[in-house]
Length: 528
Image 1 (cartoon, helix red, strand yellow):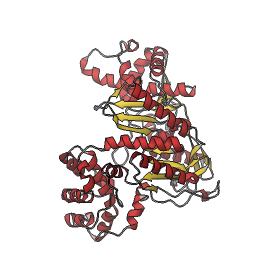
Image 2 (image 1 turned 120 degrees about the vertical axis):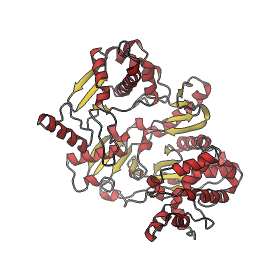
Image 3 (image 1 turned 60 degrees about the horizontal axis):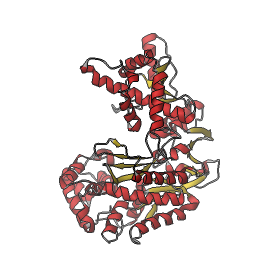
Image 4 (image 1 turned 60 degrees about the vertical axis):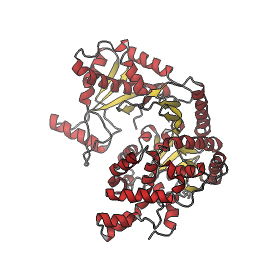
């Protein structure tokens, strides 16, 4: 893998805001067109180029070597009409790159083969080259750029001025460790306030406990990567790595090697660095901890290792619902998302949609997903109308591989009101963002106490320390809610076996959506 370049991407985050500020700098004088008609579009294109240069330079500073920006030359469409991993058109930025180069603000390297992209992409590039030049090569199919001169100095000035305690300094200095967004999504500079400093200290504590743990790795077997099954050539391994990156972009820069017929990734310490993100201009909204390690897909987390030991993931059951019950001095009994015989969603869908026998079973298996989504919508929306709008316009076909008739939602909401009458006053209360603030405090306690890797309301730890983690999670909740006892479930069984063989990996189990509370649901009597 070539680790000296990053993919060109759209402007976002704190680096995107730095790019916006730099548009008004003297270093860019003369690069904006005088015609007002073209000025807005070009400004956005320049901002996008600046964002990528800032991102690459922050990586260069962190790794003490030159990291470049790899700019693909065209968009790629897949069979579904969507764009693949290359999200930009080279034509939009080519003239800007040339102007920056002529002004001495960046250097350009043309023609390097784009190793990190998929085989499909490279084959398309070769074919297009053959049609144009009668030669099938990859030369000229990618451009690498990096900041130089006054622009490099200006970016360094912004990076050094925007690095705060606990920032993601090991990988990319993009955002402060604690950030708060206004209701319109803009970052608010509050890093010098006493309360921000206090929250920064919580991030520093979490990072010191989680980051300084034993080596964290991800060991993917053939069951997770069918493209390498039976073929372990370097080309096949590279193809498998590209498939991993498409599903887990954070793995782009991870060291990896072939061990037997598995790919072993080392998760860098930098990806265990957490940020804490608040929103709506309030320290009481949001506040969850975020780190790149959380990007590992849920169905792959069972293949993680800490110090070479298999892991276990524990989640709070029905966390936000349990919190609301605790606030009302009540206890949630059973699965919050199980609808009793007073309302069977499957039967109503049979009637309203006219399902066949095979289709009925399909809906039955997905009923809990629908109920869970509906209950969370009821809690997180601000009023009755917005709740129904959200339910009716939700892409249920993508969620459960089937549509839902509008007439399903009214009786569904009525059934949820009956089932959760003790907390029905919290429906349409926009409580979710407030509850995130509370669950982030639970995560802070658990992560600093155990060093577990936090995934919001779930945690990953060595399998041998499962009981320690379980006790810590329950204790944190009980201390917050006057002794309330909450349920905690495994998301998967720890994998066991002899190191170095395929016996390391148990047969694939259901993903997290099919475990924990889901297992208890399947064990409960079926609604009639």
